[in-house]
Length: 96
Image (tube, rainbow, N blue to C red):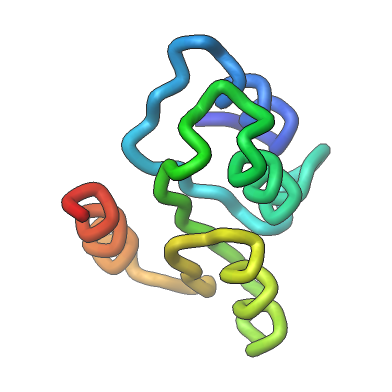
């Protein structure tokens, strides 16, 4: 678990970074989740650029959802959400 976007970027750039899924908040301090997601998808980090990514946000307007998905998110959940819903969506991505 990372405390901000920059810490997450550094963790995903470690040579042994191989998460099954990445969960990002859109509004993380020091680096927004959408910016980090674009960095992942462009292959600029050691992590597999195709790793499944779930975006979490309190911004649920259609434009926000479309921006998150356009950035490369596999799933987009708006707060508040049930922890069970998050787990089901993660399970679905990992099993795919």
